[in-house]
Length: 126
Image (cartoon, rainbow, N blue to C red; front, top):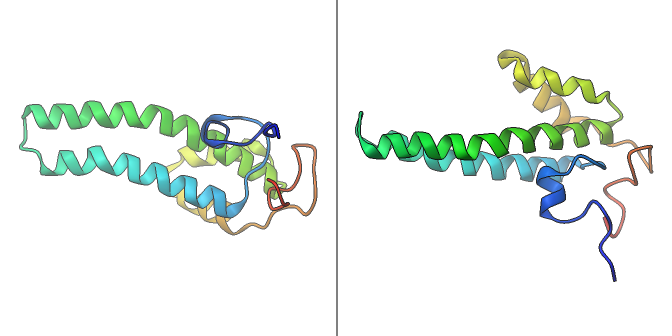
């Protein structure tokens, strides 16, 4: 059986089409939090002005760039699923408002049934 477009980890983390449920969105955000925590924890344990500190900073930059893109596209998919305008993803770059916006995206319910962005993510086989 062929996989549906909009399935798999590549689509989940980097694809721009479709919708994303609250649970999947929360798990994906937790994944990126843990990925970004690795170089941060290495930097905390490193001596100032050491090679380990420089490597931790480089590791953070390497992890941050794909994480930023991924979080942006996952947020757009989550906003589509909630029936909210995708332009609201811009609120995530405002430091004080981003926490509030993430909370809204976590608790706002999905639109029931299919919409113009695809089938509901909680349907069997999704």
